[in-house]
Image (cartoon, rainbow, N blue to C red):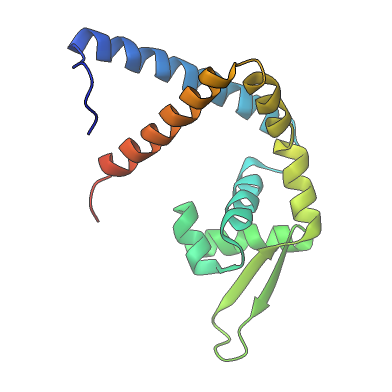
Length: 153
């Protein structure tokens, strides 16, 4: 909880509208870019998850993607054929299949979203030191607020 001036309902509504409009614009731009890539958005999502968490089982990947294990296996099959991910069965339990990003998959993901880092450097480079520190502080606070707002499981 922060100790600042309380917001009015009107101020909060205006802030929500502004942030939602910004998110919507960024999503449209990102989707337009992703649809111009040779890999499907679903494949790029899988690559992003695998890059983030490292080698994981197909069932864990399915849970992270919020899709069924058979659907996940079908996507993984196509990605293995394309050389984007590697796959191996456990020697101890052949039902357990682990997947990971290959160098080709990392390159495909970098090609699809790699320009984002450069764009962020250009945009954030336009801020002065105080604005940059404020931006990072607010992003960190928003991340904490999001974590606090998640329902308990």
